Amino acid sequence: MLHAVAGLTDREELVELLARYASMPDTGHWDELPKFVFADRVVWDFESLGAGPPFEADRDVLVAGARTAFAEWQATHHAITDHRRHVDGDIAVIRAHIHAQHWLAPDVAVPPRNRWLVVGF
Image 1: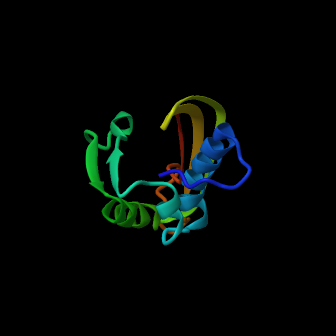
Image 2 (image 1 turned 90 degrees about the vertical axis):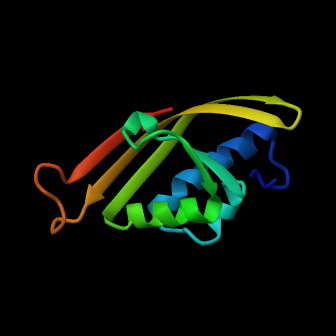
């Protein structure tokens, strides 16, 4: 769900939306921020990472699962760049590159698997 920010263009609002999305795991802001990123129902598709087929869930269920999944990471860093967007009335499509780094705490990590790099669109 895109919440308008006064004075921003469509492109700027879409970039802001993806910045909020990337900030959730990096800041641990799992309470209010998801309400400014996701609709009430979300289709989650991480099949390319081996996370099973896409599925639809309530936002709160999805966020609770993400919060749990990210709890073991000592640090994460998500960067989203090269935003290309198309707006047609109330429909917006955006494609961007994502570069996400994840580090496990030393007491959890099994060397050399203490960090993961995930890239995609």
